[in-house]
Each structure stands twice: as structure tokens, then as C-alpha cells.
Length: 219
Image (cartoon, rainbow, N blue to C red):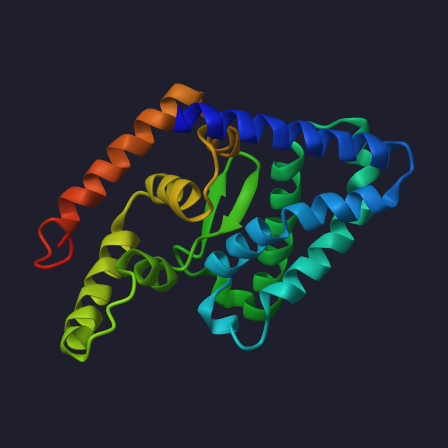
């Protein structure tokens, strides 16, 4: 029942998004701002996960979103005439491209380091930062007695994440941290829905198997 309710909620949301796109097509530019505002929290989460740690303090996720919205405003006419992906994925795509452009602008040749980008069906995107992912997976260990253990576990967990197949890691990021649906993930990765679901299950099982060898983690 919960899965069915979630699917219905997402279907209703996409229908609402498409209605706003129709309004934008009719010349209502405020509808575009409303669409972006609806998904701002999800887009900010994506930017925060993928913003290179070397740029944190120099670039704020809000600045990325502001520049991304300008791109969305400039390019919305071509999208509304030929929408090749759902509205949210279009917003996410342009936001990701803006983040990638900022990475390349500020990091230059350092962007050529292995592992900085992941190639997807619709173009490259900065990989989610392994330190941020490790922090999220570990949760909050607040007691002083666990502080040393947390630091050691984080290093090991980052190594595990960095060693994963890029697409498998991306599947876990999209599902668990960006909270995308299986349909959205399949479209982003250019996979059939069943293939995306099966590969996600295998990736999650491999990660769990590795984590089970780390004393105290799954406890």
C-alpha cells in the first residue's frame, strides 16, 4: 500500500509539473518560477552531495541554484516545445550541468583527476562526494566513546564507496540520497526499469556484504 501511495503521489506531482510547463508555454513565466520552487529542496540536496569539497566555502549551493535557474529560464522555450524528459529531470539536468561548469571553471585541470565525474546517458555529472556519503551512511554517533571509531569507520567507508563501480554507486546515490523513483533513475541512466531495479538490488547487496565485515557498523 505504501508503494502504491508513493507511486500515486509521484504521478500527481508529475501531472502538476506538466500543468505548470503548459502555463509556461502559454507565456506565464511565473509558472516556471513556481515549478523551480517546488523542486528547490530536491535540487539543493543534489548540489550539496555533488559539490566538490575543494569548493565548499567558495561556492554555496544557493548560488548554484540561482545560476541554474537563469539557465532554465533561458532554455525553457526549447524544452516546452519538445519535452524529452519529465519536468523535474529537466530541472535536475540543467542544474547538474551548471554545477559541472562551475567545477570546471574553478578547478580547471584538476577536474581531469579520475573519479571527479560520472558519465550518464544524457551527459557527465559530478560524482557525489564520498565523504558526504560516508557521513550520511554513518549517521550521527554523538557519544565521545564512539568518536574514534567513527573516524576510522568513515575512512574505511569512503574507500568502499570509491572502489564501487561508478554506475552502481550512482544507483545508490540516486535512490537513497536524492530519493529518486525507479522510473526516474532508469531514465537518467538509460536503462530499462527492470534492469535499473535489479542492478540497484545487486549493488545494495554488495555494499551490505562489505559493510558487514566492518565491526560495529551494521550494529
